[in-house]
Image (tube, rainbow, N blue to C red; front, side, top):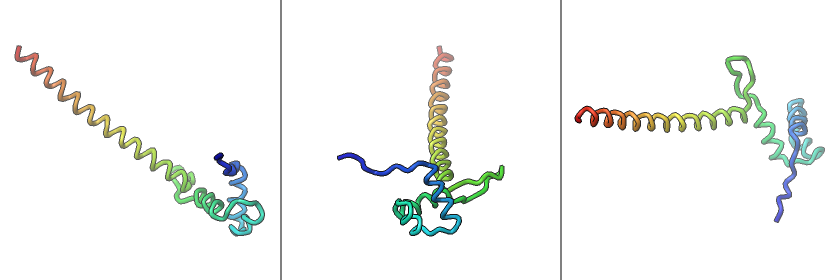
Length: 102
């Protein structure tokens, strides 16, 4: 069984997002261009500006989710590095104390 899902270009998606922002309904866009109502709704939601960062740049819902995912990954990496530092410090202290005994 092959995947028969239709792939839409980013330009096509942006065109429908822009049309929706100009007042076209999801139903109108679906009837004229073909993608399902839910698909168009997801595209619009992902492109919706949810915040403005400290530099004045708009942050979309999708960008925010990507930033959250990256933040989670970086926190996990930091936690691993902290644990490694503790283990190395313990080994170093143990190694240093065993050399002093001799």
